[in-house]
Image: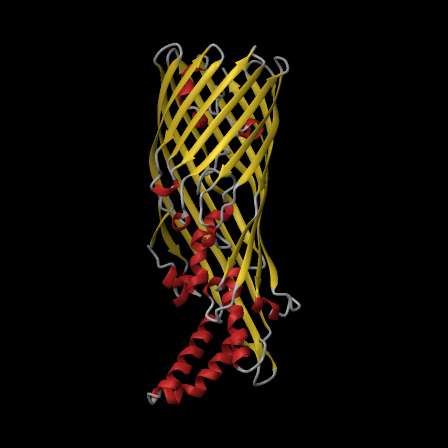
Length: 479
């Protein structure tokens, strides 16, 4: 039970809505969805993507308000022999476990005030997480440790396994709110610098239950309560255990352990924390050519656990989530480099590279990190006329993780993503942005000689899959 509850610590991963290193979102505003590579933008979202570019904007106020929606499905197809004995799985050792996330409102805004060579800026957005994931059918990591108990009892009684059933539901949510303020200064007509302070406030919650575990009772030859069966078996060895008989003590201890593991468990835990980190940036902008460099320092984020009474009083759960416990959830440092060329004030081509220093961050992925994450981005914007702009973009995210350490709650998959959209200028003061983005994920297969560290030594396989869509609209104001 401890093993399966420990996986919930990583539950934030199920709600991360876009790639960007471990624990980081990159979809700050709608303009990102429609063109992807935003590293040299001079629109209001420069506050996030290109801070030094703020001092190249026209004098006055520039404001952007954006709303996005995202839909995600994380699926694990698991094969483990005891699953065949779930009464609802009709003898099939393969079972699908699906987590669904819908984030109906992902807000962001950016504000720039520019005066001569100076610009002051601020922004707000969702820098990590962004929704909740519900596993209505539970998780393979949960069920496998429950399923092996009746399977092992069946093997011990010369049967092939014992039927079982359980009622399980898991929900995890994650949200990292980020606000930042900063200043940009144009050193020359073509070179500018910027510095920002970013405040990140993270909140996560884990809710769910594992209850009503039933199994076939070989004594009564009928389905019945698993904890009651194991308690009955333990009682048969209680006297011998009290008398000091080693064999009786071992049997009593094992059956009491099974009784505790198959009892009802309710999870109701929250984690919260905040941190401040700096951002520095540089931009070159001259005669249609532009380039930028941005470095975001690591966000050294620690989350404090708050367990509800129902979890705090559960000896199994409280051992994993004690009140006041601190969990590391760092957001890695990032180096972003971008370059663009604008042709005849009609077509803008942008190339961009992101490097995330995952090896230097401590979070739920740390044990699996083999190297840092790289992202490669490209975008094109075409100005049809002074009213209409169409755009498209591409992004490839390349994680360097040990897939042998993945769990069904904690996996990140390389992805190719495509964004499309448009912008429409109502006037020189107001622009509408609209975009949609679809990542295409690779598939990861994990084969385990001993599946989920089960005590029976049985092998198993997990196939990790992911699917996402995002769309959004936004308004830019200039005055």
